[in-house]
Image 1: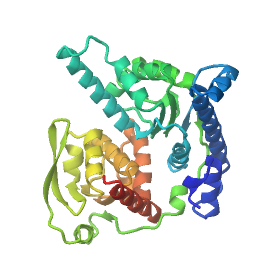
Image 2 (image 1 turned 90 degrees about the vertical axis):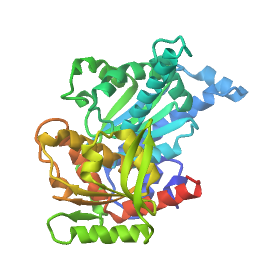
Image 3 (image 1 turned 90 degrees about the horizontal axis):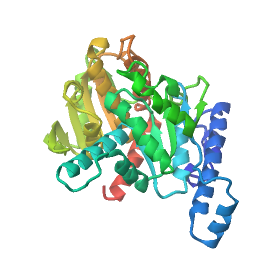
Image 4 (image 1 turned 60 degrees about the vertical axis):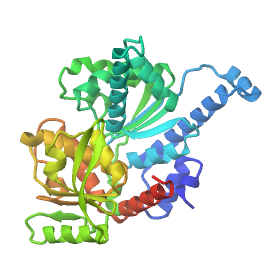
Length: 390
């Protein structure tokens, strides 16, 4: 039976344990049960707001009209946070729900704020503060938000979060998020961090914080190395990347391409057969961001990245872009072929700044993206998109 057909996170989890996918974990079971409690609360909230007689009677019994408390889960990489949140999201009864990578969501929010300011400039609105109407738009589309890998590194995001989520929570938003760090460590070394601290307090007022405290990386239990990650300097990496490119493109003609993102073009050096081929410099040394990587991931099911160097503090901007790139491709289940100067765990050697602990997640994801389970999920995802006409 598909776990998506089961009616609780706990039963879906136990089904995957029974299949031998990974081992039973007591901390994961606790989190699954807490997510099921939230599912029940969300179902009750939906029933209480219906205009039917039953909904009215149920609403009278409610002690409060406040939305349920959300959940913020943090823990080491590979602990199953994303897996459990995905199970939860599939079972959320609300139609207006959204599961997004944090960077994608913030890029969307900034774009909406920019659009509102343009309307103000053109005399199309008299609302000078863009945050309330943008929050109204967002809550109208989804009142249950699921964020994967909540990580704040951008000052523009940091300055917006408190005001935006004050408005979202006021409108009934329920947030479920995963992160590698506890809320108090968000934006840890960020510029003007004192201006970000109100968001941490606001977050704790609206979510239960759960430490997924265990040390088994379930993703590594089922990893089977496939020829998708190639070490530079070992003689065969270039030939193997070329061979993989030929196989993926199935002999179709490859040519340069362009993707239009917010009024500008992102160059794609080679594209063919649903795949795109870039150098590390093309993607991470150019001024690209989350919106650009999202556009690439939507256009191409497979991405080749060549010549990834070992990075340190001097390459922190390129490292940040690489982190966002891998998060985006992983979240959208794109297939990745990569050639690099070191194994994933050795690609970042800086010891200060947020990149050092964020890259641990990137290394774990690079390892998982070589696994049979990930590649199968990638194929299934692409097939579903093709069926939907995307």
